[in-house]
Structure formats: structure tokens, C-alpha cells
Length: 373
Image (cartoon, rainbow, N blue to C red; front, side):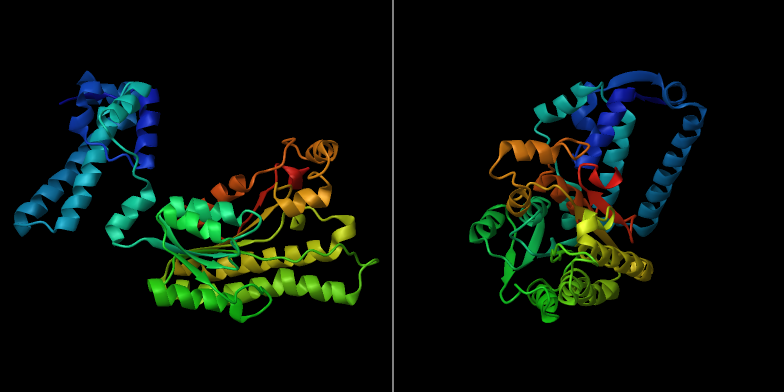
């Protein structure tokens, strides 16, 4: 049987193209492939002796599909589309391309990237919906933009930036701004977001909730009221958020939740004992809850940042007024720079866009290496 050699670099790029969602047909790129002799010999040369035994399995699956088609006399359109997509991807992998020439040729033929989430939308018939709280500070504006780019509609709590909302709509997202959601310590705040998502979109798929209240106080310097403040802002708010967003996701047997806490939970600071302790407690709550709902197809993870370049932090370290202080502050991070909101947003988006569902009950620190030194 005659086939095509898959160049090692071409194989990597082929996988990249498929992961990016290129709707590539074998016939469209056949002129770019390298024709080989026997497929079995080529598989052995590039992938080792085990590869030769894989091709018959593919043929066997194809024969089963053919037999079923003959037996039924007709094929459901959605099933046919799914089989055609799988076939084209398999053909693309068999065919291969020589390094960059393959992707360049695809671009020359007018092939456009179609992200995996857009492909899922085409299959499910509707866009995914994400709840974000808040949407005006820290990484959250960048995350809102990223989720809109990833083909999500959005339900926003504590939305103070009207220009951002308009920008999200221009990106193609339907945006629901929920009023009366500024107070994270109000148990009703997060339920309002869930209710709006259900009313307008019929439900939601994921949520990212950023909670937190910062108080510089330790056991020796703080007062009981300081402990009450951070207990409410850093722990009870997480409890309120999880109590609101999880029941619908558990009921539908799918969903992803990220609670943003702080990298300070991983690296306690002497003058911030109350803050770090309540952040660590929130992480424990997230981790235990993630295990509790794991069997229901729902993931719950936490993220935390340190050294992010946004106005409040820059002002806190004096970097907004003094280049020297900025340089001094950045020197305290292994990466020798502040992280950008987009750094965190890109990472968190992958945890809630439906493409990464193999981790739950985890805490991820996004801090330029600060928490591990």
C-alpha cells in the first residue's frame, strides 16, 4: 500500500495544525507531501517496529464504519460529518508535510485556523458561557478579553468599565452585566450571577471568581477586627462563590471553576500572617471541594498571583513613581520582571475554556517564580 512519509518536524507541525483546528483535507495538501514507497516500511523507519501494527487497526475501524453504513443504508448527517472530520485528520497525519512548508502551503491555500472551542460550538449548537467576577481589576479584564476571543459569552459581576464591555461585544461575545454585584461579602452576589446566566443563556459552563481583602497584620500587630476582615474577604467569599456556582454544574455533570486566591498562601510573609493564613485556608477549601465534585465531571482549581503589573500593586511597591523602586522590586523575582495580566489570563483561560479538564483540586501560582524561592 502506497503512502506518505511523515517528516519528524512535519509531524510536530501537523499535530500543531490539528490542535489549532486547521480544517485540513488530505487532497488539499497532497502536492506538499513527500510520497514514499511502502507505508509499513516508512512507519518502521520513523516510528519504530510497533508502528507497523497500527495501520491495520485503522483499516479495521474503517471497515466497521463501512459495514455499518451498508447495513443501515443511510448515515446521520452529524455522524457523517464527525466521521469525515476524523478521516481528514487521520489522512493529514498519514500524509505529513515537510517542516514549515506544510503550514505555509496550508496558508497559501487559504486554510484558516478554527480553534477547538469553535469546533465544539459547531457540534453543540451554542457557545460556551463563562461567569467572571470581578471584571475591572487585576487579571480580570485581560481574562474577559481572552474568553471572548475563545468564543465564549460572558456574565460579568462588578463590571465598572463600560469601554471594556463594549470591546468584548465587538469581539463577538454576548455580554450580560449584572448590577448590584459589587459586594463580594454579600452571599447573594454570586447567586445573582448564576441566576442571570440561567435566565439569559439557559446555564453556564465555567466560572472564574477573584476574591480577596488585603490587611497587613500579624498575630502580634493585628487586632481581632483585622482577622474578621480577612476571614470574610478571603475565606467566606470563596465559600459563597462555590455554594452558588457548583450546584448547576454538578447537576449538568460538567463544568470548570477557578477561584483566584494568592501566591501568598504558598509563601507566608511575617507581617501578613492573617492574610496568608486565610488565603491558605481558601486554597484548602478549593482543593477539598474539587475532590468532592470530581466524580460529577466538574473541576475546581485555585490560582494565585504575586508581582502582577497592575495599578494597585505598582502603587504598593512604589513602582508607579520610581523606576529605581520598580527595578528593585523586579529583582526579587526569579524572572526579574513583573508578570503581566495577560500572563495570568492566558493560563487561567485554559482551565475554564473546556479544553483542559484533567486536573482538579489544584493550586497554581503565577508569580514569576516568587513562591518557590
